[in-house]
Amino acid sequence: MRIVIGITGASGSIYGVRLIEVLQAAGCETHVVVSESGWQVLEYECGLTKAELAGRVGCLYDVHNIAAAIASGSFKTDAMIIAPCSMRTLGGIANGIADSLLLRAADVILKEGRPLLLVPRETPLNAIHLENMLKLARLGVKIVPASPGFYHRPQTIPELVDMLVGKICDQIKLEHDLFERWQGLGGFSAGRS
Image (cartoon, rainbow, N blue to C red; front, side, top):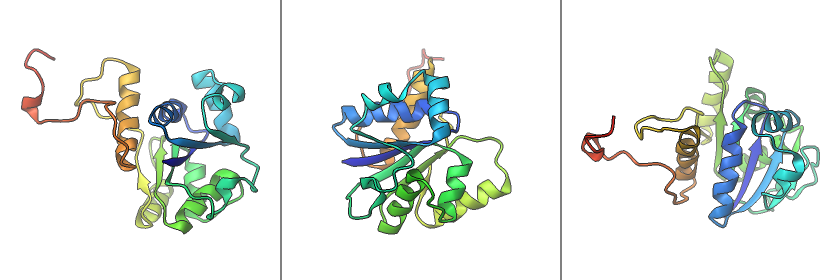
């Protein structure tokens, strides 16, 4: 699979980093673009520099390079995932604003009818946020809020992150074992609290 990953300035850059790790381990070809504020959050939350991230991905693009491969529909990709997705980015996509490579790549995915997944990490949501999400959902965009479940009884932050990354992988039909799937109340051992 050839997957485009966007990382924006919303909190939760750990989701994008872990997603890249999982996709790379699964043999996916990763094409990554990070917004300007995304770099600030990546460094603050994850301690990652541009050079370090570049060493972890297939191809890393400058957000201002509108001539990059992912800016064209003729460059075949299987999906695009923006994790985390800021409300600025979500609003830009919803309103057809393509003034950066990140927004242009998402616009290309939409016009080509390919899967687009957005992982918004914002709370509370106002009516504009919700209207933009609804607008995109009606176009077939998958909105996967950064709100992990707890039915698998996570004990660590990485387990919470993997739960959400697993849900993202489910949407692109990528097999994984990142979290324990719900088997009904009888699916958990009686001794686990």
